[in-house]
Length: 285
Image (cartoon, rainbow, N blue to C red; front, side, top):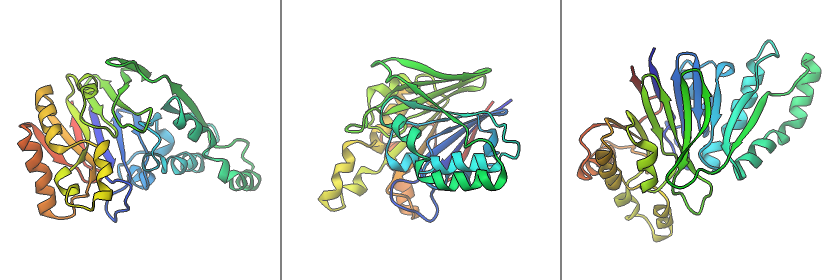
């Protein structure tokens, strides 16, 4: 058995022709776990060969729209593709607070659409999903939020203030450990989340590029991860595979892509490094 880490979206809130909104699919055998669902997540899952009705669970890191705008599409598409009307509810594993409110209300705008589809097709139920809230983890601790078979998922604090709560996830399979930061500053909390990780999926911002933009844009440096600091932290953690995503700015030129690499290396990181494009896959086991 192998564990696949598939980046379903490397983008940020700005639209890109080539980058879907943030998301990561972790797949172990027939267990498929989707972390965040930015725009075009459904299309990327199709390209990854993931049957959407067979997804095992969804996990949200926080309630920013670029991480959730594809969740309605995911849940609706799962229902539309279900020919048996018997697919088990999809667990939506989310931190208590705004993510719960969003998940509970997200299909309200589609009430008329769902009603006419049920009437026309004779279906007896609406899209099946179950909101599974979990309490914000204690500082310095990880909380198990989901498990299936030999796989378990834990959540830990990250630093994305003023957005609260915001969490990262740690996925443990027999092949190894995958850590997903979600949106965050480089912080000590990531040390807890990523300790002993084989793959660390880290959001990344090229601060030197943002510093050259107009001052009104500089606020985004308050709550995103600087590539130089990422490099230093990943090296200290001994992470063997570092995958950068949620790239700000998107590396649309070779020079900009190289700048991500150079600043990570300047931070001290010597392991395997990927400035990810959509559908980049890392395989363990």
